[in-house]
Length: 106
Image (cartoon, rainbow, N blue to C red; front, side):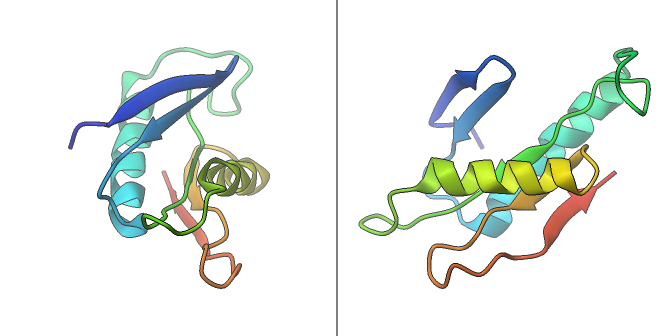
């Protein structure tokens, strides 16, 4: 799966937009990304693991639905960081506002 768009959002944050992708598939893609970065074993002295890791927030929307996709993904990112970093977490769903459980962690 190729990203439709990749953009730097802040100094250390990026957004990867996957069109025609549901939340479960976005989670799978995000987890592969997280594992790939961890697999590099790039030294990072400030990291608790001693290596570079990534935390990923994900969200999904349907055409004509919620427009705050980036905000919900950012909330997922905050959740991933809050729960210990180096993991994937979903922000609140657009349908009910309920927050799914944290995603995966290596």
